[in-house]
Image (cartoon, rainbow, N blue to C red; front, side, top):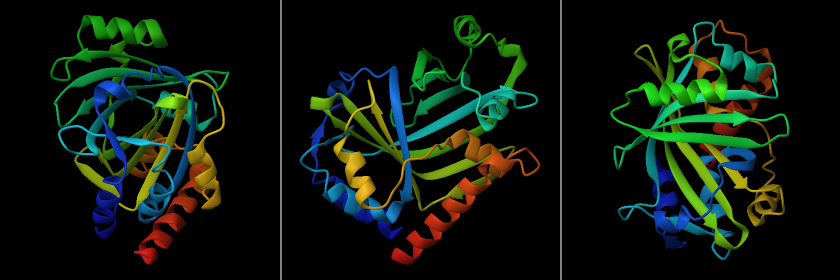
Length: 255
């Protein structure tokens, strides 16, 4: 895709930082702000960020490949909690960093105060051992035996950081869903997430607003499940799906 080449070139203009420096920004308990836009707009957005942000670089690359395997109950109760807007809700997943092969069990929760909290532990070869099962139960009240793999989601991730503001930004694109040997993808959608200890001013927020990119709620897990299980309840996501379709189509015309 032409946009990928443009993204590569625009990322080279950022000052780079190593993963060790990025890890200094601890955001296991944070406030998230999410935005969606066409991938084709990213170079123009980056052009306005060079003075404020640095790009995380690993093995001479400024984006990384991720694979998330999400778990849910048989009746997809975790998905339905999100769909209904339940204030205290969870996602349970195994995240694998494809460049290193490292895998982590992660429990991501959304509290009734609008904060995102994450607990993680490294695991071996995607095996949920007794320690990982205990972490799941202690943080969600769910026994691992009640869970099964629901969907795999692969994507590329760019990470920008602003050390002075303790702010981390992730940009996910080339998103692919896989469930029961069926695959779908959304090539021209970028999901931008600004992560902060407390909700405060952000240079990137201002830039996105100038590009008429408004903040909204989006979950890759819920987006994938609603796309891959057609009969599942998803009426509250229909407007979001329409917006994504328009963004992708408009972005393709920009290309």
